[in-house]
Length: 188
Image 1: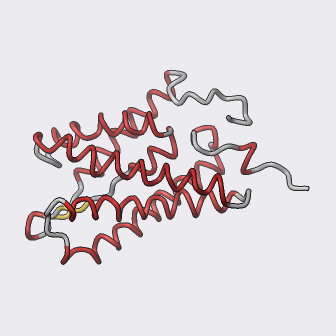
Image 2: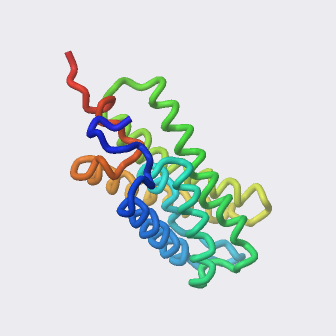
Image 3: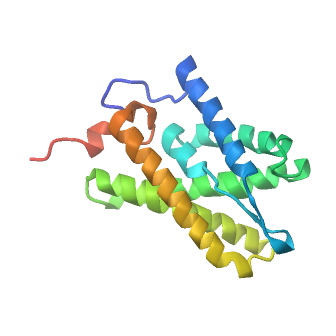
């Protein structure tokens, strides 16, 4: 898939495995930095969209499966909530970004701005909103904090979009979901 000749497998070498482990640790740290709001609602950045964009869906889910218990050990969530945390703050956001990525690959013109703004920026923001909606659907009182969640969604989108843009420019081989041949092909 990569035009640079690099293997498509995100775990094909020890350096890529190290990057996944470091990214999982950073996501666990993000999950540990949560706002303590009244009524038991805690909001935090997800990082799941970034993991998907950097490593692809299977490796992102693996990285999030490592991040969830690590975040619990660091005090971010109770140990009993690790599976729920992985599902609501990891698997669902990865699924949302994956679906947006597939839709843009099918329908959008071949232009790298669609990848950066559509997949990285909008995908990350919508993944935060989906996670908040899932928390709300399970009975957590999130109504008073929807505006805060939307602001966090913008922050998630901005951070993910900025990180992915920088990596696409300087280290595109680190971004598994960015195909140089598709997005940077010369136009006739």
